[in-house]
Length: 181
Image (cartoon, rainbow, N blue to C red; front, side, top):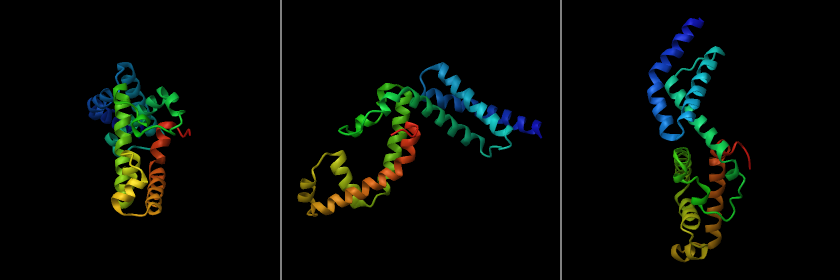
């Protein structure tokens, strides 16, 4: 049985090594970190098989583990940023800068993708108020004048949008901050 598991691990490594390495190299600038991440990923694959938890879709699993390892390394490097209070900061200031290297650019793209998905889930009225106020910086008074909707209604819509976004983005927030507030 162990020989069969070993052959499945070897086969997965052979099939995915080149693509996985390219994936990690695109997101991590330090070559030694690339190798460390790859080693961690394949060690985790071996551990999963040895723990009698064979991986069904090895390729997808390997890429997910690699993504998690990249995020872990980014999180480790940006512990200072995690402790900054977001009050008074713009959306741009809360996201990692794309100029801070491939890891930061990757994390930024993951966060933006999650935010876009969460915004798309909102009812149109809530999404429009949230974007107008938070992203465009338009006051509720100006939004009310433009739309003819009562300010209290606009405030309620934004509140529901914020509650949804907080709930929806909690997991990704915890993933990047290690659960720290």
